[in-house]
Amino acid sequence: FEDDLLLTSEAREVKQRVRDALKQLPPSADMLYLEVSWESCKDIRFNHEHPAIVRAARPSGSAAHVYTRKGILKMLQVC
Image 1: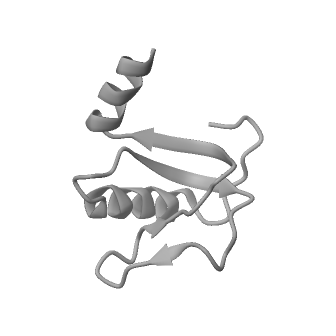
Image 2: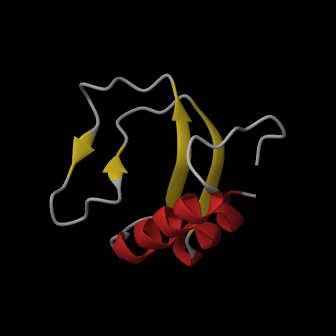
């Protein structure tokens, strides 16, 4: 996590949102961005079946993210 990240909601609510997003991640997901920077709002994709997650188009930065097991295995192949 960034050391200067400020939550915009109560910690309990943020924790529940992260849990919901993790449950809704598709099997093809490598990671979950918890916050992105410089993303074009017109390019992000919403899915009504998975309201807790949004598909980013071209995020340029992130304050925090979670890797799935699949994503970690991909990272290990690169490193």
